[in-house]
Amino acid sequence: MHKLKIWIDADSAPVLMRRSAAEISSRNKCAVVFVANREIPTENAAEMVVCGEGKDEADNYIIRNASKNDIAITRDILFAERLVEKGITAMNDRGTVFTKDNIQDRLLERSMSMNLAEIGLGSKKKSTYGEKELKKFAATFEAELLRHIAAETYGYTL
Image (cartoon, rainbow, N blue to C red; front, side, top):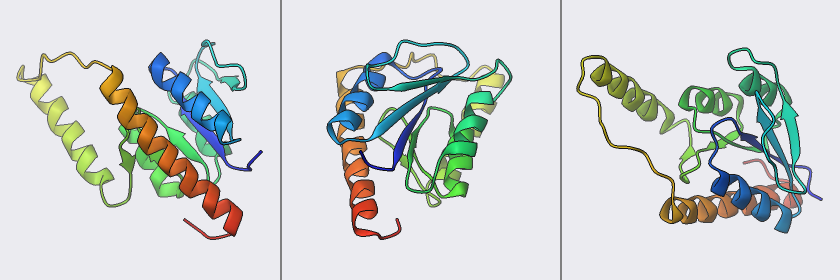
């Protein structure tokens, strides 16, 4: 088993993504920790941490416990920013890896979308999560995981 852990902000994580992340992690001998404000169904080898009901409790738990070579998966862009600032690899369920170079653009997009929604110009498009999104996530996640395993194995810093 590798030292690195996969942290999943599981409150809003799609079931398909949770299963895929657990399967890929297990196949590569990495621990998975689902963190949420409530109990959620988890895959066999995954650990489940239930945090308090307060705002950002799950996020704060991950921030306190994740290490630099770990990977965190979240849909929350503000939380992703905190992870990136701490030097932890953060990605979303659609396969986007957040970096110091792209996180500010994502935050700006979020802010603009919220402003448009406030004045009634927000998108009515329903966000779906299907096979296309899952395939992109799985490919990106496995590549990132293998990069982290190599860093751990050969002792270099990401």
